[in-house]
Amino acid sequence: MNAKGIANTALAASALADALRYTPRRGWRFPLLSALWAIHIVAVLLVALRSPRVPAPGLLGKLGGLLALAGGAGALYSAVGEHTREGRGRSEGAEHYPSLSAVLALEEEAVASFDQPPSDGTYSASRHPALLGYAAFLAGLALMTRSLRLMGSAPLWLAAAVGQAALREELLRRAYPWYEGYIHRTPMFVPTAESAQAAMGDMQERFGGSSLPVETDEMDDEDVDI
Image (cartoon, rainbow, N blue to C red):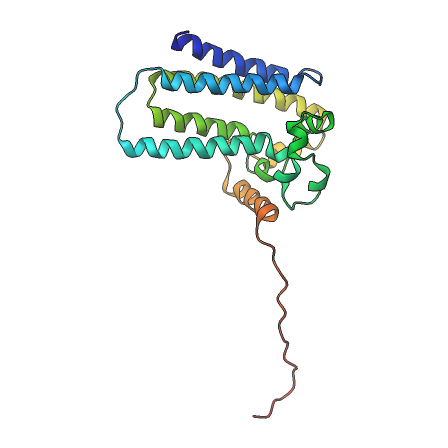
């Protein structure tokens, strides 16, 4: 298969995965969705590695690698970690979330938790933090590999993902009354200073060091003889 065919495979896999999110929940849906996204990521990497490259400074490639790593990790945490007990850390109600092992074992109750949209953590910075991380991953990979075909294909993949995100939001507004208020206070993709600060506060609560009360001796309002 040539690079063009691989790029089309990546687009088809991501489109099918997004379409599956709107079908009634079945036992096979989650593993199939995961497999489609895995196919997409593998196809993206093949496109990046099997296409002509443009010259660029070595430092740009290193920065691209860091951006791809950070974006990929952020997307994975937002898509999976936010729905698990371990990913919620010490936040209130974390005990009600399934464990990561239960999710990996595809237990029915654990998989069902992915249908509930979060509104805190990374989701208080952006309504679609996984998509934001995915965009950063593609941009970093393009900088790192300097792949011409990836630079041309990535905007198409992102446009398809953004369209699916907009459709999903309309469904969420109908299903969850609180989602309308969430839309008004949280940007769709790029965080604002205020939303980023809210997300940092949530992450500090989840994973920050425990704060111990500091005991201080209070002076009585009495005169002290020296």
